[in-house]
Length: 366
Length: 124
Image (cartoon, rainbow over all chains, first blue to last red; front, side, top):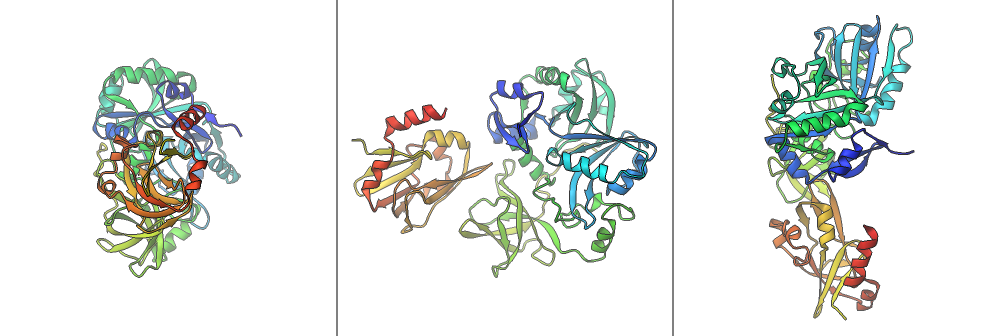
């Protein structure tokens, strides 16, 4: 199977990016250095090409009822123009995918899903559509997306649009916003823990938007690759499917129960109710290494008696904090805050301490 | 004959008396980016050519340092524990481990500097 390219592929090559394979896509890992791109987003602004993300529209008279069955979060309480984060679950409570749902109106929803799961999500939705008067329209191949993130994001984007960005609250969106002469959808969302926007538009306009943003952000805005996308989201306590989330882990076990409706009747809701009633087996904790070493995804976690109790889901030397930190999913009855654990780093077992998993204060807008 | 050898995995080995110092090449450090941690082996570890004698880690990834030739670890560069960035600053000047080689004949399988430069040219 040949690899897919986003409409910004040539821009990445021109900028000297290290382009790597990412779930069937050729994506920029870094343009300069991961740490520099990471800090640019924290301190000023970075621009990510996230055109690989999937966009699926669910529309029609039964779409509210259909989404209620498929999605863990409550969309009925959501106003038009607002966005909810949540999950598709399997019947046994594992996670099919995590996604954003943009409520256009009660009969129309835009689902933004992981590139790695887009085909699976599409099939999952279609496998359950029978009996609902809806249309599932997967427009992932036609829609491009960039994310401008960081404290200077609004200032830069405002230079190339007449729409008053200040009026857009966090987790809200606006359609038909003209940016650099192009009609776009803008949301105040992101995956970095910083303020910022995600902008959706047709593939043909991608280079125009990309260039206009860099012109508006000259000297401030930097291109940012998938490398720092992962370190940024990790520091902000945001999960990644395949790391913190998978089909063997429930959102409650991963610590994201607030995105699972307590009353809702969705696929997997019985398991969620049972887990809330006490049948929870695992939990996600934050760890800081006490000994030298770097804990990475997949490394085993042990208690001090060296019994294996879990696994590292993401670990890095944090570019913002300059400390080695890691997320781990461990047994529910395992160590808690300030307790020590051991992490298997190749042949050695190194000590780590359980810390608050929100490593960094988020700077997103209210 | 020079005392400096190279591997296709971008390690270098410099023979000085009874010891052979091992590091990674400038090309390797460039590929890795900022090195944030170096894991050193224990002294007296016996390694065969191709075994791991350490790990260099960037934010993004961990890469094994492979022994260019067989021997016993007789010294490790502890400066790298606190200052892993020394490898970025001068990869050829900062060795990672020193080996006492068990079979100097193995060196004939390695590249000299000229061959390594040609090898890099082919890779690029």
